[in-house]
Each structure stands twice: as C-alpha cells, then as structure tokens.
Image (cartoon, rainbow, N blue to C red; front, side, top):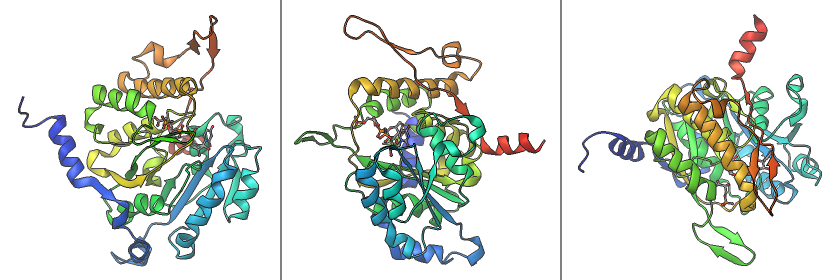
Length: 326
Ligand SMILES: O=c1ccn([C@@H]2O[C@H](COP(=O)(O)OP(=O)(O)O[C@H]3O[C@H](CO)[C@@H](O)[C@H](O)[C@H]3O)[C@@H](O)[C@H]2O)c(=O)[nH]1
Ligand SMILES: O=C(O)[C@H](O)COP(=O)(O)O
C-alpha cells in the first residue's frame, strides 16, 4: 500500500531531520558551542557525564582516559561514576582516573539499597547538577570519545532537541569469533518489535535500549525511572510523550562492543523491558499483569527456577521534591 501519512512517513521524516553522526561534532566544534558561539555565555548549558558501574574495573580506566581531553577542554563540567558497590576495584580505578565516585546506595538512602541500573541513573540525577546529563555504559570495550561528542553535539547545537539516543552497530563476540551485527538480542527480539506494535513513531530508533543517551535535566527530572533494565525503554517512551518526536534525536556512534550476558540471563532483561513498556502502553491501571508482575518462572533442568526481577519505579525527581516540600 502506498501510504501518504502515518507512522512510515512520520518515522522517515524524523530520520531525515533528527539523525546525526558523531563525526559532525569534533572537539573543536563542541568547544565552540560551549563557548557560546550561538549566544551569550550564560545560555550555554553545563554538562554532567554519568557512568553507571558494576564490576567494570577492566573498562572504566580506558573510558575515563578517553574522556580526559574533553574534560581538559572544558566540555565536561562534572564526571561521576555511580558505583554498585563493585568488589573488583572499580571505584579505586575510577577515582584514579579522575572521576567523582558515588556509591549508589548512599544517595537517597531513605529509598533503601539501589536495585539495579535504572535506580543508579535515577539516584545520579540527585547528586549532579549539569543542565545536560549524558549517560554512558561503563562496560564498553574500545571506548572512544565519539560516544560523548555524538550525544552532546545535538543538545548543544539544537536548542529544540531535549533527548538524544545513541545508535550503533553491535557485533556479537564469542571467544575468538565475532558475528557482525549479531549483538543486541533483546533489542532485536523484544524492544523494537514492541515499539513497532505500540508506539510505531519510535520505530526509527536503531538502539532503543542503548545505555548511551543524554537529555536535558529539565526533562529527565520529569521522568519516572524503572529500577532495573526497563529504564531505557521507559525514558524513551516517556520523553516522546512529554516533548514529542521532533525533540528526540539519534546519533550514529559507529560500532559498540558490550559485554554479553548469557541468553538465559537476558530473559530477566527482556521481562523488565516488557513490563516497563506495558505499563506505559496500557497505563498503570490498565494492565493488571504489568501492575503487579510476578517473578519470572523458568522451566530449566526439569525444575522451575523462580527469578525475582526488580520492577519498581522511582518517582520523577521533580515530583519527589515537590512532595517533600509540601
Ligand atoms: O545493576 C546494575 C547493572 C548494570 N550496571 C551498569 O550499567 C551498564 C550496562 O549494563 P549491562 O548489564 O552491561 O547491560 P547490557 O547487557 O549491555 O544491556 C543493554 O540494555 C540494557 C536494557 O535497556 C541497558 O540498560 C544497557 O545500558 C544496555 O547496554 C554497565 O556499565 C553496568 O556496569 C549498573 O551500574 N548496575
Ligand atoms: O541490548 C540488548 O539487546 C542486550 O544488551 C543484549 O545484547 P547482546 O545480545 O549483544 O548481548
């Protein structure tokens, strides 16, 4: 069928208008934008970079080293590693690399111990100040400063853009074998099909689950954060609903190699992603199953594994502050 309007046109138009490449934002351009090339110095937003970190001693050092030139050039105002009580020396390595290290469970401690990656991101907002916040996974091998340059570029260059998501090619690496574009199993089999079914306007996002994303604080503080791996799909859908498609952008960051979890471990991630999406699609009151999701029941080895998957959501920080002020 030859469609004139509808999701296909919407997504194509958006892709043409709001796709960027990290190469468009070399360091000199960012420095120029930061120096207020587009207006008065006072209008230039400050920049916070947050790295959620759980047992990433092997990768956090090289990542911080790659970010150092941007910090030295004044592009980064605040660099925070939010550590999940890692036992492998992550915190020490991060401190040696020049980051401020915050233990996730010590932030907003009245909410109890942190329960996953989403919780870490949410808490990081409470201990940082930048008007632009960039989140970067800290388990990336071969990290390059283009990740930060790419995510920051559209936010500094385009005042209308409020949320930027990384896009990348994902190889799948098993021992010495690498399958090009074989990575992102939950993305391919759960996240994008789900978005196509329920929020097709977001079908243009290559990596809707990317942990590499950035947003204006004014937007991020209006979002509720699922405590676990539902955080990316949730923040994407909620940002779209709050600010509209034209305020969302994606940027091609090249290739990214993450540490692979086992397929069975990814069942928990897929469940968290589905519950977070379902709550937004059907509404918290609409979908009984998503309101009170049970544990994940997995029939392995002739027995039933009962796996608890943290699904709670943290309230928007803005609301939290308003409620505590009342
Ligand atoms: O409880 C946790 C779990 C993870 N992490 C960190 O978060 C990042 C990503 O976690 P990881 O377990 O490596 O996620 P992936 O398997 O790579 O999952 C992808 O998909 C997830 C679901 O959308 C996203 O949260 C991830 O950022 C994205 O990389 C890494 O730096 C981890 O160290 C934490 O800080 N706390
Ligand atoms: O985003 C995803 O789909 C998950 O992180 C799994 O990625 P992987 O299949 O590359 O391990």
